[in-house]
Image 1 (cartoon, rainbow, N blue to C red):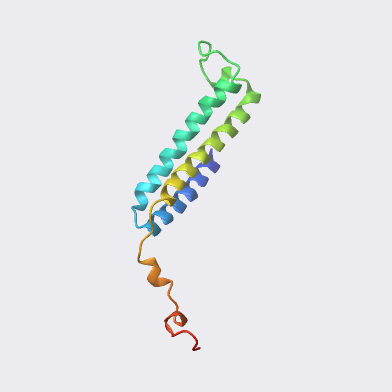
Image 2 (cartoon, rainbow, N blue to C red):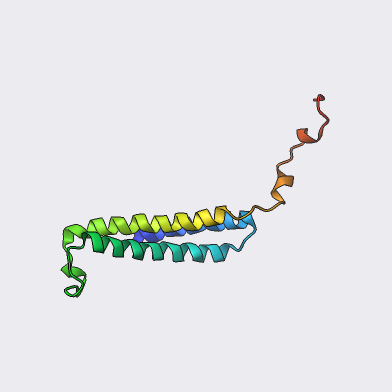
Length: 118
């Protein structure tokens, strides 16, 4: 569980930096990353329980009713789904247009000289 929080911290930091590069609010996109992470993780866990849980919904009382051997597989499905939630938010953010100010920073000193002269 701790590794998940550490991974989420660094991924939120990356999406925040990308949002700043795009000229958007970093905190908004960090919260959207957290929301996408946990939403996709819950959906992935529910999907995994439906596929590999080997338990009826009526008999489900607590986590101890699941077989212990299935818990690691369910955890893996949840983590993969959670990372997929991060990737969805990142792809939406990457499709946003860049700032126009970054083009001025790409011009070098040699770009301003006339062609043919060094």
